[in-house]
Length: 326
Image (cartoon, rainbow, N blue to C red; front, side, top):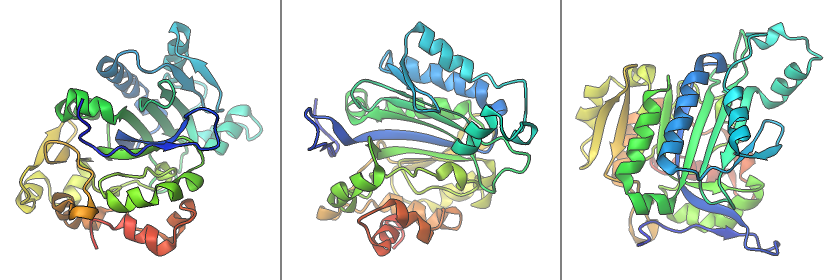
């Protein structure tokens, strides 16, 4: 199998085995401006779609308390049961402040949270975090569903298969925005790992670094530019609609297509994701073009974001954040 994409694999030098701390993946993520009660059925559908695409690669589940269990038949039953919202309350304000449910949700800033993974940090994962169900939700708060595939899956099956999966997931979710493309997957403390891949982040602008707190603030903004860029109805209207987008994107291979029946669209930048390579002038012009078009709705850089990038100056983080604009 030909390696068509850069391998970014960081091995834990302090471990006795070859445990990875970071690896390259394809990441698909959707931001959903709804509570768990409105999302459970759709998320259960995405679980079925992902399993159909990858087979039995998911083997363990991690719940909101950090406890793990194997995805046996009983384990899958537990995950599926968690997707059925409780009938005992609708909003957190209805719970007693000393109750276990109130304490757990306040700590997590979420109602439901779990992570499903494969073996030995192999690049397969599916994560769901349902936002805090408040009568007055935080401005911009969203629920998040994300999935990853190892880069080897992309090379083996082709980008068409990955795009098909992303489109099928998007079609069953009431999304505000979303995206898919190359990214880093981190297994450990983010602030300790990122300085160790500093050169790779500088070199490959198409490799994303996922945020840990996006569910608290993304809202009606777009989190960067990627290979696939999903825009919900509100965001699509903010940039003039599908036809206006088509007219402003001149790069070869850039397309705009409607998604599902809820008025969303996806902007695709070429036949497959690209890492780019600034060492040989690969600055991804199609990505830069879309960034300029979407700039009014892109999430702006905020000084506090640099706190999660220990070892980087605020200017370095700012430059990475705006790498397709400046």
